[in-house]
Structure formats: structure tokens, C-alpha cells
Image (tube, rainbow, N blue to C red; front, side):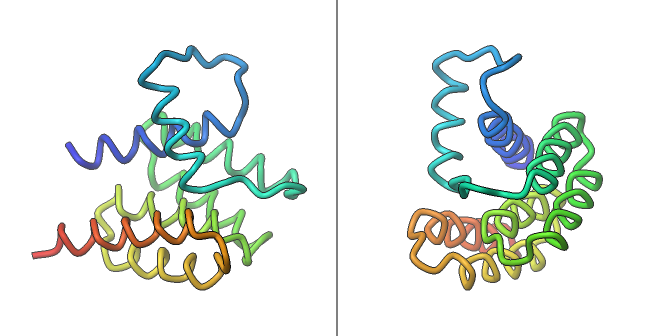
Amino acid sequence: MRYVVLIMMFALGLVGCAGPEGVTKNKETESAVDNIRGETPMPSGRDSAVMNLELQAQEQLANGNADGAASLLERALRIDPANAGLWHRLAQVRLVQGRLQQAAGLAAKSNTLARDDLTLKAANDELIKQVNELQP
């Protein structure tokens, strides 16, 4: 159940980043989108290739293909390896996949790149906390 919620949060976050076209908003989705937007703010002036890969990753995840989403985020990271938000999103996908140690490591990597982004650091810390709670 927790994984389904995480998938939906990730998908809603990427939908929120894509813009309002084709998105039916209600009180619940707006709240979830706002939460994820606050969690991983979109840097300005991002490379369009990275944005396109993120959008494709959103589509893959929405279709239940976490492996495809992870692959696309990895490609985006090869283009923009200093993007702390991408590392966080990949950590979220790894958590959904049940790859707990990798999720925690990716969140820690995101924290090292986040610099003064306290919101992103808090989101990474929360993800690491979730990993610790899920481990036996």
C-alpha cells in the first residue's frame, strides 16, 4: 500500500511540473502536487532534454513501469549530474521498487548536492527515515 502511495505521489509531482494541460485538478490532487512541488522544487533554466526525460519518466511510472522511469531518470542524470532534484526523484523510484539501500544512498547523494535547499534536504531525510522504517 505504501508503494502505491509513493508511486502516486511521484506521478502527481511530475504531472504538476508538466503544467496544467490535461490535468484534472481537485482538492486532493492539488494538495499532493503542492506537497511534492515543495519537496523538490524545479530549478529554472533547466535543459529541455532533462525536462523531457522527466516527463517521460512520469508517464512510465503512471503506467506502472518503475523500471522504465528509473532508466529515464538515470539518462537525465547523465546529462545533469549535479541536479539534486533528479537524484531525489530517482531515490523515490528506488523506494517504490523496494531497493531500499539504493534509495537511501541516492537520497544522501541528493543531500550533498542540495546545498542550501532545506526543503529538498528535509524530503531526502524523510525518505531515508522511511527506508529505515521499512528495513527489518
